[in-house]
Image 1 (cartoon, one colour):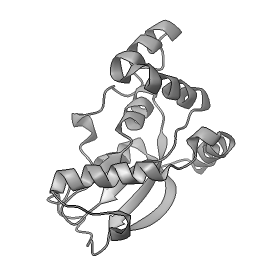
Image 2 (cartoon, one colour):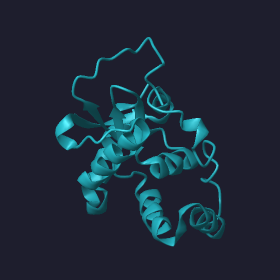
Image 3 (cartoon, helix red, strand yellow):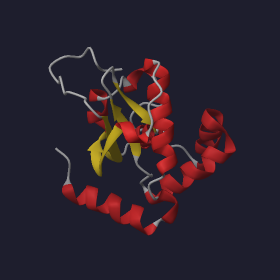
Image 4 (cartoon, one colour):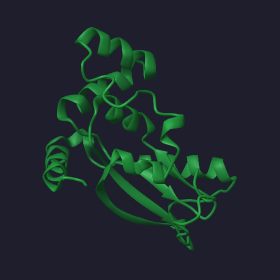
Length: 163
């Protein structure tokens, strides 16, 4: 069960930190990722947009095979000293991403990831680095925006449309 007070804390921290505002470029990246995976040429007009919500990290597996690409195990990063953490983050995605990651760690939140629910599959279209970081830091929840391809029908009993 997700603690509503933790969700409120995340959104308060997100609201206080301008760099964590939602970025529509992330939606475009998510759609591009989805298009590549299903060989389509969709754009923003082909999707309905949900609200940003706090989602438990363990719940992300319903949208993507997180274990197949997540960089770190749960809590693996949280006890590293500053130098070890820096080296680990730079080794993962370079110094530019590391700077943004350190801001996320300091504020214990990040800008929302984007989940794409499409007719052919469902995936985390943008934000895999943020999911990896949140997992490695042992966070419980992460902000998520779900975008849904128009005409999508939810077959939650079937796994064929995932990943």
